[in-house]
Length: 220
Image 1 (cartoon, rainbow, N blue to C red):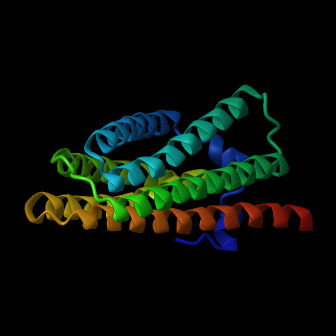
Image 2 (cartoon, rainbow, N blue to C red; image 1 turned 90 degrees about the horizontal axis):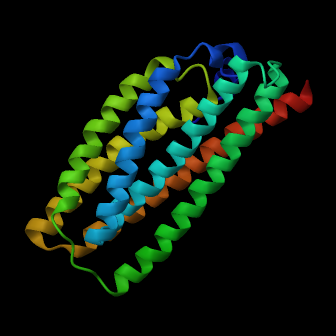
């Protein structure tokens, strides 16, 4: 999932970001925001750490989407300078902030997971349905974002997160089945930890990409 220097160069032009249809991003934002609220609410109600971990990952994507839509709006209104350097700084800043928020989310998940391993909690059956819904929505969002993922570092990051969320949803679905039918309560915590590791990996990819943008700017 790493973004190499050639990809960074391809993602750096502000004119490319302006050409992205905002309706597509608004649709993805609406779907992922709704999924975030559902996963958060059901995760809290059912005591499912894997769902809460997925909600934390989604929150970062929603945050990045909102900032990207704000940049597009400012560029089209002429409020933000259209120079490549200005665009790079904003993209790099969002990527680093996004990465830091992901790391903070993962640390909270790790803390909760340690407590869950010491005192396992009974889970309700709804996580199974939510995981299936998450799988459908993430597949649809990835298909929507794929054509636009070559224009912006942040959209590329959200696209990659969507792919990771597809695998996370499959893992959550399997863990929900194991908990519901076999009463293996530890599986939910294990999947939560797996998602946390995935979150940290994505965080470092985003932060490295942001720092690469800043480094190439300083060289120029």
